[in-house]
Structure formats: structure tokens, C-alpha cells
Amino acid sequence: MRLTILHTNDIHGRVDGLARVATFVERIKAETPHRVIYVDAGDVEETTTRLSNLTKGVAMHRLLSAAGCEVSVVGNAVWLRYGPQVIPAQAAVARYPLLLANLEPVEGVQPTALIDGVGFVGVTDPFPDFLGTGLFGIYATDALEAVRAGARALRQQGAEIVVCLSHLGYRRPFAEVREIAVIDPELAELVQGEVDVIVGAHSHDVLPEGERIGSVLIAQAGSFAEHLGRIEIDGEEMTASLIPVGEDVPRHPAVLAAAAAAEADLDTSLDEIVADLDEPLEGQWVAEMLRERMGAEIALATSQAMLDYPLPAGPLRRGDLWEACHSTANPAVTELTGAQLARMIEKGNDPEFQETTTGSLRGEPRGPLHVAGDASDLDPARTYVVAGTDFELESYGGLVEPDWRLSIRYDFPTIIREAIEEKLGAAIPFP
Image (cartoon, rainbow, N blue to C red; front, side, top):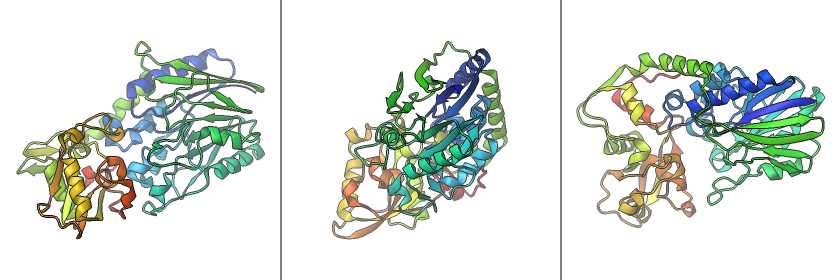
């Protein structure tokens, strides 16, 4: 079989980058006499990009469709932040199948797809610590066995080549915090003779010529639509390369038109006045809202994880709220000893710590920690009911030590901006 596979991964809401990728895809298809298939390995969505965030990633699948994508795997950027109930809305606008073979039950997806003799099976990082709580109502199956089962089924359906779209990572993501069962190089060793190509994602690795492990070729194109991956297959010969996507590349009009249409669909909802604020809406207001919502004694709210900036008193447009609140954090509650709580507050009030950041804040400093409730005289031995979000109560936010092993109850699938609107008495639209 003579085949060209073009691939992207971890675009994370870069609309202009995707529009430039689409220009390359169209050019390569026009100049290539054999079959060209453009695929994406997940996380086209991004919480800090306006259009993606305001539609919970749905609009990005309209854009990826306009770019000519023919199959994609579900990454972690949406279901982990918004819950799996968002995926059917994404599938409804995607003009390609969304693959997900190792999480069940999830609506709107399928484990495999067969396109012109090429079989695709998709798996994603299952975040077992998160799914093990049962909060989403879904569970992870073994990724390796899911790939093997999918490959066998595809071969039986006539697939000449089997490609795994893997959102597991080339390296172990967040290795200092957790591990996942298998990553791409390990997967490649274990699927010899079953899978031919692994198109990877999640770890944002730039693999200029891919990596050959036995008979399996691993490819990954970095992130943020900065490269378009290209795999050439000619019988048993396979090569991988990357095409830089510079700003000198024209943006494809079809992607720009899809973005404009998606923006227009938002206009009516975003112009609605959701409240007339008596006082500014800022981090302390959010902390008080969380304490009341979750029935807690104390609540903690990190400034930058809640709002990018305060909103003034007066009429509040939904669009203004959503622009200021890109956070996908979920309201949560747990129990902490007074000693643990005091440690968190002391750390959150440290000016040096407030200037630090994390990946989820995309480089922005944390800012002050807002505390709602009376935390002036904490009893170190007493247990307190404390509200916050996953950013404050999970170890990745930097306030909680991993060995505390907190039992956290989440208000899934509600995110902060929805909780704010509910407090303000506004009806919440869904894309």
C-alpha cells in the first residue's frame, strides 16, 4: 500500500495554527497521487483559548473538520475538565469519528475506524487516580488489551495497515506526581506484528524523524500546531518527518469561516445580562460562593485559578464573565485537620509562592489565596470541612501534600463559571 498520513496533536485551541495546518493538508493532498489521510491524536481543545473554552471544546471540532481531519482520538483535555458528558456534543459536530477504546461507557465515541484499508484504534491516558473514585461514572480498561483487540478486529475487517492514535504519551506525563500503565515506546514493544504505526500525543514531544521500535514506527508532532507530521508508507518502508508551520503560511479560509460561524453562534448568549452586581466580583466573592455551595466551614480560592481579573459592580454580561473566568475547576469539598489547613493558608499567603505558576495556569502567577470563613484561630487537632476546587485540594495545585491522601467530593460536572452563574440566578446555556 502507498499511503501518506498527516498528523497533528495537542493543538490546544490554536485557531490560526490549525488554519495554517489546513493549508498544508490541502496542498499535500492536491500534489499527491496516492491516498492522503489527515488524523489528529487528541487535545485540540484548550481552556485558556476563548472560542474553545466558551464552547467546552465543541467549536474546535468544527474547525478540525474544516481542516480536513478524517479521524481523531479523544485526548484528556475535555473529559478530565468538563466530564465525559461533553463528548457527544463534540461528536455531533465532528465530520470524523472520535475514537476511544479504553474508557467506558462514553457516548459519541467508537473504539476503531477503518478508512480505505487503513485501520485506526484510539486510546487515551486514563488518569486512574481520578477515575478510580467513580465520580465520572466511567472506568478505564487496559490500554494495551484495548489496542490489541482493536487491531485484531481491524485486521479481520480487511485493514492492511493498523495505526494506533495514542494519547498516552511518549514520556510519562507528570512523572513526579503519577504514572500511567503504558506509554508509547512500551506499547510499541508489546504490539509487534499487530500495529504498524503509533501516532502519539499528550507529552508534546517533537520527534523529527519518529522512532522505530522493531516493526512499529512512533511519530509525534510536538504541540500547538507548530508542526504537521508526515508519515510515508510504501509497502514495508515507513518514514516520518515534520513540516514546520510558520506564520508565513496562509490561513485556510475554510477554517477561518468555521471559526467565524462558531463565534456568531455564541453572540446571543454572550450578550445576555446575567446579573446586576452590587459589588465587584473577585476571588473573595468566589471563595464565599464555594463555602456556601459546598456547605463548608472554610473555603479556599486561588485568584488566577478562579478569575483572570475582577469584574466591576454593575450590569454583568455573560460574555464578560466567561472572558474573565476561563477556569474549568470543579467545586469540591474535603476534610482537613487544622494543622493541614493552616499550612495551606500559610503557603498560599507567601508572596514568593503567589508568583509561581503551574501548567494549568499557562504561565500566569497564582496570585493571592482567598479564604472564606473564620480561619483566625485554627485548632491543629480538629477536623474542618473545607471547600475549594480541584486546584486547591489536589496536589498538582501546590497547596496540598500528596501523602495527605484527601477524600474529596466533587460537584461534577459543574465548573466555576457555571457555579457563579447559578449563584447569580442565571440560566446556563450549553453549546
